[in-house]
Image (cartoon, rainbow, N blue to C red; front, side, top):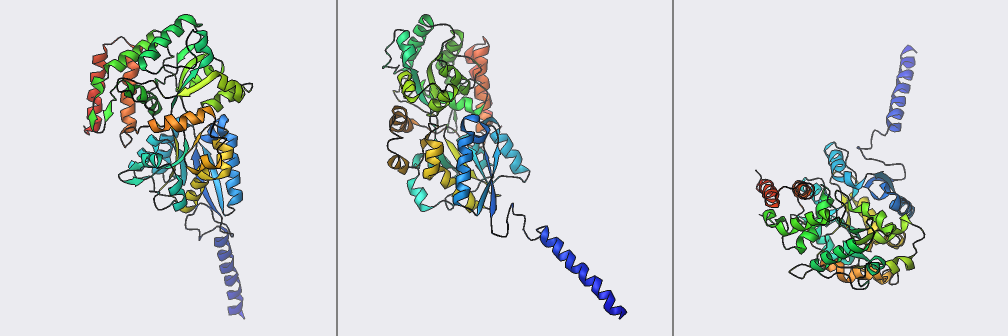
Length: 435
């Protein structure tokens, strides 16, 4: 009898231990989320929900994806666009990488170079790969593999304020075609219009986005700081002189991010902008009284004025999606990426209202009316073909910092420009040659 009594409590203890282990999910193998119905959770880092202009639309798209895919939950993690590379690097090295993230080309390729991303060639459906814009898809390649998934197109175009041009006595329907014409137009604008009107939107901040914004202007002057393994910053004198002149004559606002010029556009205080197709929606978000009709009465868009080679340039500011190597749910992340870039709901809810361009060819066929407005027509027909790839890679952030620090010296000091550019040249050679 005594032996039997001892076995009863021992059996109860073993049963309780088993129940506790089961309740704690001891068999989850470290997966982020897995319930009895097989639901998985993917973490999505993005700046779309960190910005008021795009937050609600993005949340609506996430909600619809979860509705159409009940086996997948999306954990939304908003991070400001300027903190993407730093935060994603910290998350990755700390063993807390997300499943998928919204990235610009420079951030995405930098993450790919550090081994943080999963190539997506075998994750995406054939239907999607046949539909996606091949040029943009190839921009996201690193060492022969695709790491970035094009989500929304956002190349930079040359916006011009027709009403302010007319007030300055310039032809509102004939914007400057060359850099020389642009410079002359800004001189007239400064003479004829109030002092609070800014002739040109140009980003001179020390950041990667600053370089991508100025890259097209640099290209128009015939020389970019780095071309492959070739460093040629010391030949950028004409561009640097022009940039210094812009600030000295008050043709732009120094030290401003290009997004900081958008409120001025809404106040009818910007003449020439260099911005993406979302410029329209963002300007309208600042002033709800600006209808589509009023916007197009005021603004037109075309390619950036050309330089000596007579070729227009546009640096890609497109938004991409990257799937992380550490993700345990890569297939679910890829499904979410395809939904964001290709689904009718995402295009109707996010891409179209915010003024973005689609990155899949079928979108224009599915929504011909929505993508035939004057701005999108100009972007699709003229500006997208002018997009050029920047020197993305593991050193891009360092290159951008050195170049833009040099441009800051150009606009904030009276140092001889050759001296500044020679210093930039030396530093870039050290980066490129690994010194």
